[in-house]
Image 1 (cartoon, rainbow, N blue to C red):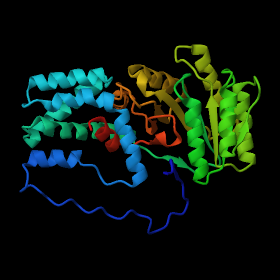
Image 2: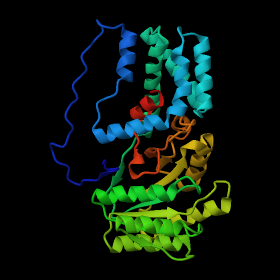
Image 3: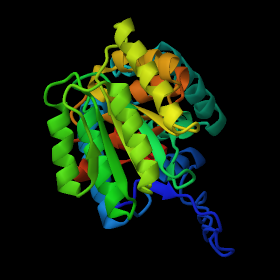
Image 4: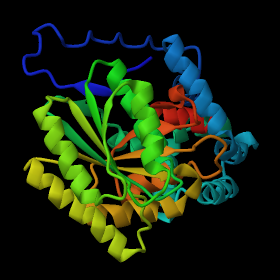
Length: 348
């Protein structure tokens, strides 16, 4: 099991730097340069068994997206027809116009520079393009700089917000962090009960009020977290549609009230988005960021989606870090986001 976060250490050890990675041995004599490059891109780094198991799940989840893109490279030559088919496949995967144009331009440049002549080698170069595009989204959630670290979580109903909070709580608790939950989703009938189940399951405390004001619940939770010395306060806010202005304003109110309990909070503002919604997810990111100034994303339900390219659209148009991605309902189906893993899984 992997820790979802990096705990802030005020006094890092002098020898804590990672060991240097050995450079790969050149194999230019065995393969043409372009093919060698493609093979090195397609080859996966040996991973520990749990992470390899996660990667297998991610591949399976993205198969519907990736298969439509990968079929483009089954031809025998690299020509305008290949690029046109690739453009269509990327757009159908909800990569978006701007990201698609960027990827095609980058890919053509790499093909020219490497003198690639085999379509299958182009697939390897596309993995590199996607990796470079997504790398700015790769960031580790840091816990410990503030006591407590206040994390406000937003998202529309049905995106998997409360479930994601429950999974995150589990892994935080397993990693030794003390967690306090705030059931500020007071509008949805079952939200409080759902979060209470996760609190019981993880043996963590929860602050809730039947029909209480969301901002008041959030204030009480942050105050309690400070008084009780908790490491993390997770605030589950009500599901909102970005088109509902008055409800979005309620989220702004929660943020303002939290700041009254702790002037530095919230330290993280996360949005949970459903990967199946494609370009609609990008619109949610833009709308919620305008209201809340998001610090990170959790992308759920990538299992079986044909719209996995939306992460590329987000990277090009609204590059907010993706802390976690999910491919199912099980606890182990939510993991940290890695740009290269995602690119490889997308085109596996």
